[in-house]
Length: 381
Ligand SMILES: Cc1cc2nc3c(=O)[nH]c(=O)nc-3n(C[C@H](O)[C@H](O)[C@H](O)COP(=O)(O)OP(=O)(O)OC[C@H]3O[C@@H](n4cnc5c(N)ncnc54)[C@H](O)[C@@H]3O)c2cc1C
Image (cartoon, rainbow, N blue to C red):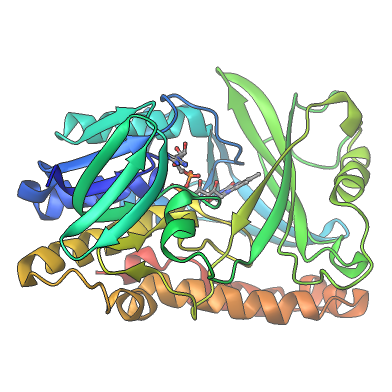
C-alpha cells in the first residue's frame, strides 16, 4: 500500500480533511497524500464569501484567516425588490470576502507546514475500491491507498467512479467581477447584497453583489444563483436576470467577462461513501438554499477526519456509518435544514409571499436562520 489516506483535490474540503487529520491523528497524516490536478494558486470561480462558521473552524485549526487578503462587508442585506433585512454582527463583519486562488493557496501552505504531502499537477482519472484497498488511476500512473477521500468538487471523478448512478441535483451559477460603481448605485460600497427579486420570475435563487479585492484594488463581485428547483417553470435565462439587476446599479453586463460553474447540492438521502472511499465538500453536496460551500467544505473535513481515524482504530473501512454520522452532526443538520428550506421557500415563489416574508417577517427569518442555517460550527464538537 502506497498511502494510508489519499485525498483527491486540494480545495477547502480536501485540505480541511488533511489539517483535521494532522490535528487528530498525526501518525495517519504522515502517511497521507493530497493529489491536486492544478497548481496553487489556481483560479476557482467563487464569490469567496466566508460566513462565521468558516472562521470558527479555521480558528479551531489554529489558523488566522486575517493573513489572507480580504474585504469585509459590515452589513449583509437580504432584499426583495431592494428592501428587506439588514444583518449586522456586533463588533465584527457580517461577511468576509476572499479571493479563492489566494485563500486555497494559503490553506494548502498551512497543510504543507504541518507535514502534509501535496502533489500538484496530477489528475485523477478514476478510483477502484477493492477488498485490500483502493486503486487510484491518474495521468501520472497508479496509486494505492487504504482510504480515498473524494474532495474533487461538484464535477468530481471520485463520486462518478464509485456512485455512477447517484442522483445529482445541481444549481447553476454565473459570476462576474467589476470595478466599484462610478455612477449612482443604491448599494453601499462596504456592504454585501443578496436580492431575491428573480424568484417570482421562476429563478429559484438570488443575485448577489459583494465587495471584494483584486491584488489590493477594491472590486465588486456580482453573480446569480439558481437551485434549479423551479426548472419546470418558464423562466428567463440567468444571464438576463443578472444583467437586469446589474443595470439597476449602472453596470452593463456585456462589458465584463461572465463565467459559470455548477454546484452539486446536499440531499440527505444520497450516499456519501462506499467501502474504502468517502466524499467531502461539493463532491458530497453543498448548501441548497444559498449555494454556500466554503464553510461546509471545511466542516466536512472535520467529520471525514474523525471517520477515518475511527476506521483505522477499528480496522473497519466500510464507512457504513458515515451517512448517519454526517446527518447527526451539526453540519448535517444545517445542510438538511437548508435543503428542506430551499424546497419550501423557492416553491412559495409568488411576489405577494416574497414581499410579506422579506418586508414584514424579517424577525422570523433571522430567528430561523440563526437556529437552523448558520452558526452550526459552534454547535459541533
Ligand atoms: C460562482 C460561484 C460562487 C460561489 N460563491 C460562494 C461564496 O461566496 N461563499 C461560499 O461559501 N461558497 C461559494 N461557492 C461555493 C464554493 O465555491 C464551493 O462550495 C467550494 O469551493 C467547495 O469546496 P471543495 O473543496 O469541495 O471543492 P473545490 O473548491 O471545487 O475544490 C476541488 C479541488 O479538486 C481539484 N480536482 C478536481 N478534479 C480533480 C481530479 N480529477 N484530480 C485531481 N484534482 C482534482 C480541483 O482542481 C480543486 O482544487 C460558490 C460557487 C460558485 C460556482
